Image 1 (tube, rainbow, N blue to C red):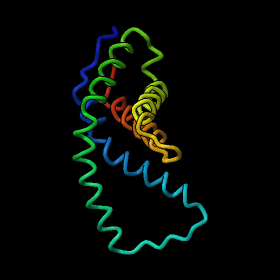
Image 2 (cartoon, rainbow, N blue to C red):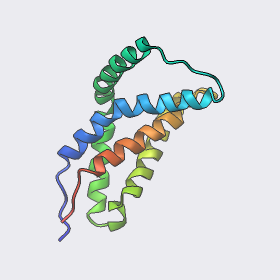
Image 3 (cartoon, one colour):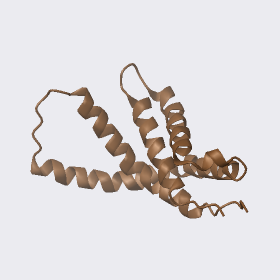
Image 4 (cartoon, rainbow, N blue to C red):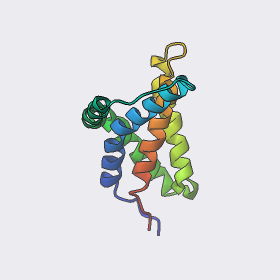
Length: 135
């Protein structure tokens, strides 16, 4: 039996992962751009980062609810008949490509937004996939 799974919890997981995933992806991008530079982390930086993480979770969820709802809905529906789409690697790839496609129009030369969005999309897709089970 391969009935369609309930997608509500998967959509919520993917949506809530968007803000923190974007922050971490952007942080990785900035860190990679400054490779070799010495960075000193001050205590106030950690406080600001914690506050930014909370705000990113809220605003990221608001911005990501529609793409996550569409992505989880389409992939879970397609996976009922195409069993290969049940694999987490398929979800990660689709999420990365979708995030890249969303970020590409906003990418200026060398700002890395498309890559940041690709990593964010992959994380959100995998968060959504982790909540789904097919019978």
